[in-house]
Image (cartoon, rainbow, N blue to C red; front, side, top):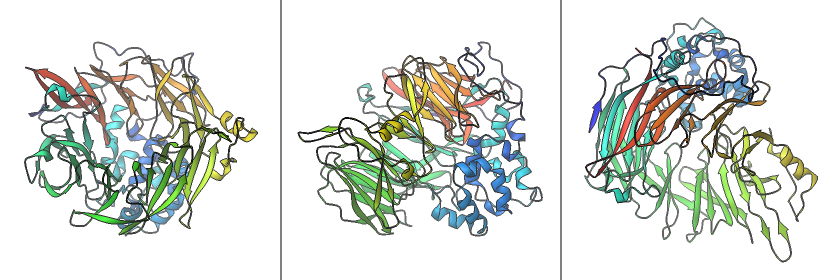
Length: 610
């Protein structure tokens, strides 16, 4: 069943909401345990000029700008001076500024993860003429033609000065699950998949008897849209889902072992194609353009979606048909596919050399050792690989961490960057490497990424003892100390804040100042023990939840993170921000009614007392 809980959306006014039960105390930025710089009072977010916006939003705004609205590259570089410098946007900006009329077509073909789409992207309409006489640098944010859609910036501008939020349930839908015995958390999946624009969400789960597509209109009202399947069998039980970036197709994996493609129509989604893939692992590329499938008794196949919404097999050259696949990863550009083979002692890279074929290249072949992990940088086609410690009759190796980078010749160049096998991970924006698992428990180690990986090159490690260069690399870490054992670490989208959750439930939020120094901005034990706390897409909020309550921490003008809103709901399983509408929080919860287990999705709107 589904029910809109309010007939009209309530606007977010500037009057703060004051709950009867005040949120618990958090440690402010100027507490004894925090080192923080004084921050001047600044205007609300909607009134600031471009150069006054938080870096998290600058990155997002830059990625979605209408470049036919930009006259001078130089003026724009000044406006985005820090973001342009940090994210290497100068070449991209100069190129696109010279191609104003064909921008969308060029960007759709070349941009990472297809951030724009000519037909369905919310920024597809050209910018209006009004306001173009004002220099881009000095425009007020709320007057930019792009701002009506980007992150609901007007709403964020009203949320920022509010001391607390009043969550209001706006829409609810409940689906029955199978028998309780099927609700094994180790094998059961249930979740929410958001479209790239945030205007659609799919509520699905392997434990649910059906699925629901919800759509939001221009007034912010949510309503159900029909999923028109070609049959009424297992396709309705969805075990995984992915919205494609360019065409807004919905790709789903079903319990019957099929991949289904649905495309939007008038207030509904129609079944377009179906591929049977029984007992196989399925993985989609970030944009949804490619799909890779493999199984214990099935060879690896790379698929490409054609213009008729059908999946077509692509030729893979140089890969043994009997290769045992351990893990598959697409690179950010989707031009490369990394494969762990034969018990993780071999790494093979597939590269697409034209629209119809992929070629295989062996990158690593190990003897008496294995790869512990590998991952691509989130912003470039560079692969981070950890190789395990080994000892044999004639030699000993302490392991190593290497970066593999593609060369113009097509070969992959290895650069050894750590002399032992540290378990490392890239930060959200790729500016840092950090220790994924904390050695010693309480200290988080960070290493700022060098401008060139060759600047970090080390010799092949040998023997039991590290050389001077190896010891210097390990000692060069930035160490963030905590009073309790660290359990999980997450960087904000811009890498300017770090969220740390400890085993006892305490949450730390670190911030980086203009000089690059890190300091604790907030320590809180509210809404804990937390389950996977996370940043919002803008980096301005943190969402944390327990079995019965979800809390929203918001960054204030004083650079601390007070608890601004609390959602009380029994049986919480998961909670999410709507990525492009942070005033909406989606909560999944579980209830028992007459021996029947139900999973309920509730869309909460963060509002004020009015």
